[in-house]
Amino acid sequence: MKGQNLRILIGSPAKCIALATSCTYHISNTLEDVSTKDDLGGFQKQEVTGAAGDISCDALYAVGTDATAINGEAALDLVLAGSEVDVEFSPTEGANNRTATGTKYTCKAIVNDISINAPNRQNVTYTIQMQMNSKPTKVVPQ
Image (cartoon, rainbow, N blue to C red):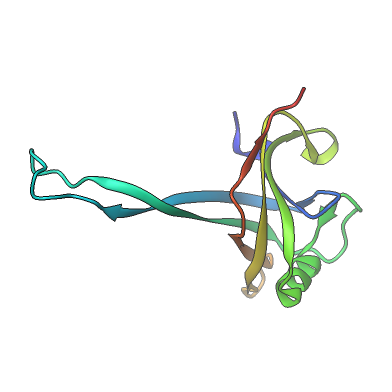
């Protein structure tokens, strides 16, 4: 699988992030040490006590795109709104590689950060970051 075939989609109906160059989907368990003096071998014993996740996407900043995508301006609006949104991490295909296909992971998230980079004589880029607000759900197509 190539990276261009995995996309972050936001909202309902789901829209991909336009002109994305990379995306990251990160989940980690929170662990608590439950070792006792009776444990042998010198290794700590761990117990999962929670989990957290974050999602980020790098993209070229665009003002105008078609109705199937979120452009840079819309991404900035999501951060300013501070609302919970539906997020999908899924393989895609179709026109402009924007139609979700195959097994996907969905969750609720808060779009909490955007960093816009505008270097002289170069393309404007941005990074958008989201914090998961729910456990991801695996959705397998029928």
